Image (tube, rainbow, N blue to C red):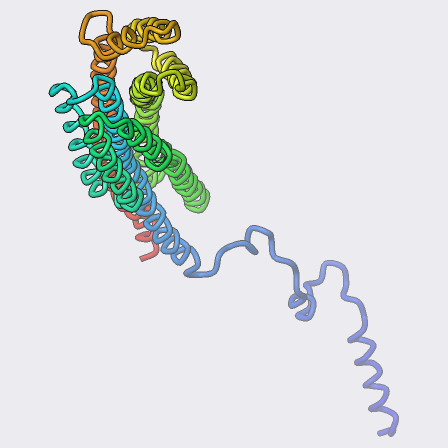
Length: 444
């Protein structure tokens, strides 16, 4: 055989191998194994076990979200109830401090008025003074126990009251013996009370009023609305994912959980709006009346005291008369804010008597002016002022009771609401878990 035969055979084989297949012939193995892209639908199919893992994560997430909704919602209601309780306590403390201020100025007005009589003061006025001082001491101790934040200021005030009472006793002792120095002791006592005691009381009134107003302005509504909307969004998003994954429009458990949260959200929001409306009415109504009546009564007693001090000064009391005018203006402003028409009329009656006293004194009829200021007749300063002070005291008590009742009335409903919201959150958590568990069963 020729040595070139094998090479010719090899060339023939190569030619056959490289020859294109005839038309219609089946594809070669190499062509059959050539890679082709998968359809998009096949490429997005989740890996085995991925969907169950997602369902378990969603189940845990929904349980956590719904329980968080129940806890935060319940805390919002409970916190609001506690805030209103503290607002009620701060309002009571505010009224105590205002009563302390009123009692002190009433005691001073009584002492200065009795001082005009000379010698031994009338027993009735002495008893009124002693009662006012004793009541002041009791209220200071009660207020210190009720609000520890005020204890230091009240302790300082108590020292002022003790010093005031001691100086008044010195004034009385000298006045009974006819010593002119008694009048100076009296003026010093009144001046020290206003310089050292009233600023402390003003600060206590302001701090307690601010605390009460702050407690009435709780952000509970915004917190509850926020957590409710977040929970609803989470439940709806989960339902959409489950519906797309399993091609079912409704998941019973998730749907029921959404309904529970939605109804709780609507009912809770309406309840909070109602409570907010009640608190706002209290703030603008009875609470405002408390401040107006207390301010009017405080300034009125301050004016009454300055009226007597003007007469005691015997022609040198222009500074006391200016102080009377300042207090009188404050009384009118407070009564205008409170809308107390009857009190305004009674204050006008006293003001008219005071005007006649000033006319008598300025015309040189000092004895007649003193008689009109210290007497007990119908048209005297004492009788007209007593009528106003008694009415102002009743108005203050009524306003205080309405404020306390208004704030207390909403607290039981808020506690019940807190319990209901917590149970609703727990129920929604169980329902959402049950709904997702139904889908998990399909993989077992």
